[in-house]
Length: 162
Image (tube, rainbow, N blue to C red; front, side, top):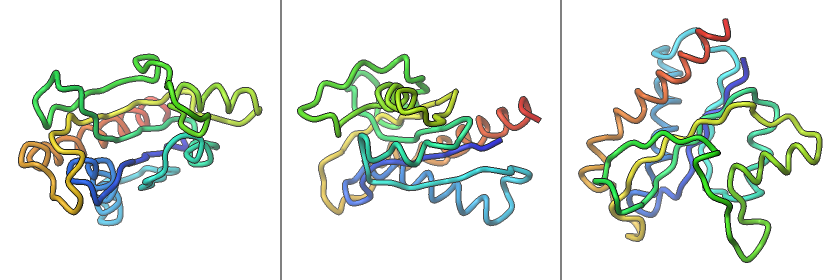
């Protein structure tokens, strides 16, 4: 099974780094052999957004996206699991700023193989603006749990697929 794990964000902007840092930890665990038997697992860190992400998704059967989110309705460090259907349409000044549902539709229109299942792991952020800032304590504390939940999802898919 070809699975993409995509950690997105900006590692220079405090809590916005949570997706990137999660992907790095998953890569480290994979390289250390802590994530075993996962053929076809691709872990990617990216600061890209919108249509620029389309190439990363193509050719995978399933995908996990890890990112920071700030709703203000949950305590920082809360992990939220979403599907693309939970997301609203992106209202942006340009088609370059698209969300996952729009990327999936674009891939279908172009006849490209987009993952049939996408799971989003978003962590409620406290600080998305501080340049050069470290993770807020609540987000730092929850980071390992986020990594473990993503790993559990990967293993669940592998078990169901194999």
